[in-house]
Length: 255
Image 1 (cartoon, rainbow, N blue to C red):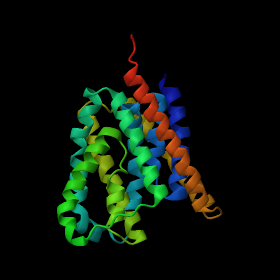
Image 2: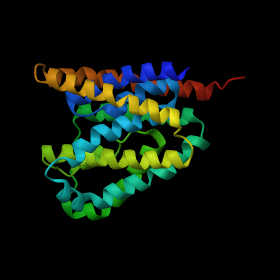
Image 3: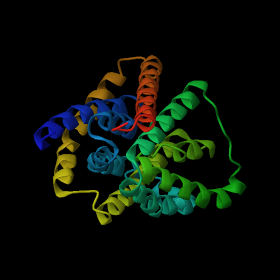
């Protein structure tokens, strides 16, 4: 596939992913990486995701009024998440990518099931000092493996029962630092080429355009109904990626 073809596909995918993020407030990595993985494979999909992720989440995470307070509370979670993307990305160049694609598909399915069942965990504040670094390590490794920052970081932050606005900002901080760690890790392991970096940068404009459109339509549409359809579609995508990857593992070329 040529760079021009990848650029066109990436712009369309990130326009859609930006629309979803603008409409429901989340989902950029899941939609973008999920769709791009089916077309160009997981390592390239993660590389293309980096610049739009940084651009959209930097504003979400660090433009609010609670930045200092949130960082003081969660820095032992954020910092390990950022640094432990490195061992996760090691697998991208050393492990058969079908295993990682299957993991991504299962993460998508897990997220959908938890969202549809509205399962709610509650973490007492007295346990945060112990859980922050553990959850940070787990989030970082999984982000490096799959490029998906959702599991388990989003569920953990939700379980600390932050008010809505603070939760949205904390998620933006998590996604930003995870994307930085992922970009550095992939760059040091030669998984992020100049051409992919340029395509990723070009995808930033359609991402923001999609966000603006999604935000405008959100004000006129039932978010609950759209979110249900979105989760069902995301679940189908996760199922497709998982089954395709498992089939490839069970039926390797040449057999």
